[in-house]
Length: 106
Image 1 (cartoon, helix red, strand yellow):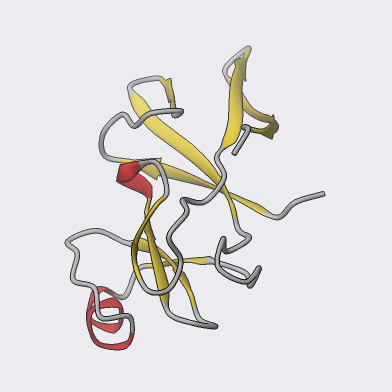
Image 2: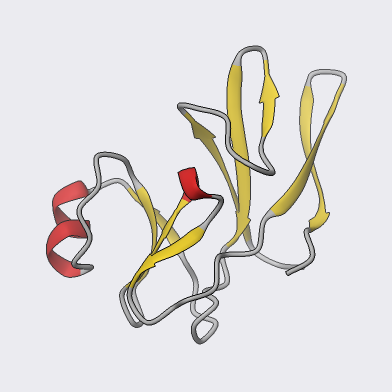
């Protein structure tokens, strides 16, 4: 019942999953600051200007109070008022398919 997001990443990350040489991680979309919905932001210039955080890769951003979470750092809050990381979604590989099996403990 929690909105979540599965992301394909360029490298392995803590709590992630590897399948067929590709790396994945999943995160709750609920911002740890005040519960707004976080989205994957691929506009690097918008992240730099609006969220005051420069990155070479897409980030998970919260439009309510401009928090930024880095998927390569296991969903760590890297900018904005949020200080706690996004909750990770535990993943399992079953017969080549990726399944979300629940939220990891915070």
